[in-house]
Image (tube, rainbow, N blue to C red; front, side):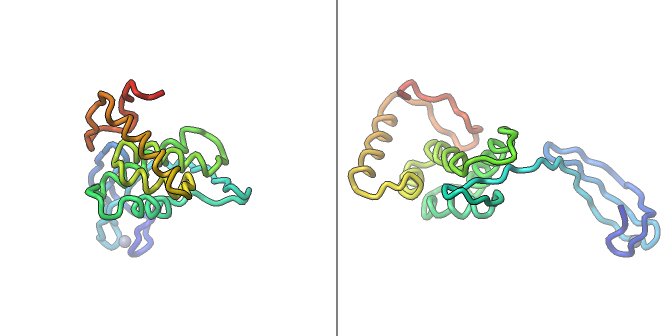
Length: 171
Ligand SMILES: [Zn+2]
């Protein structure tokens, strides 16, 4: 490693902090005296997405979030919840351990998480993703959702991780 200011390799580590996701090191350049912080994270490659037409596309977290934000427009959903959802999708993709996966894997994961997060956002996403192009199929989806909500269910608290215990109404 070299100093980002002067290029010297004479660096001293002032302190190290290990957090959940990264190791942070505060460094000082012994040549120019500049102080800066470095972060060390595990880099795990994301699989490439195979689209419906067979073309490939790199996974794009920002694009994923735009899609989620569109579904969540004007809903009382904290920005943190959208970040967490995007992170859950990334983890899910990595856990598959494959070089390429169908882009459906992303959509399926988003839709299952949105279902827990916000029913309106879920329906909006479902209309686009499941290509519900007539009122009957939209209504069928909403009826299904209402039936699930009417069943005795666990409270969905924002701070809980994904993968909440499912209600027994899942058929
Ligand atoms: Zn320097």
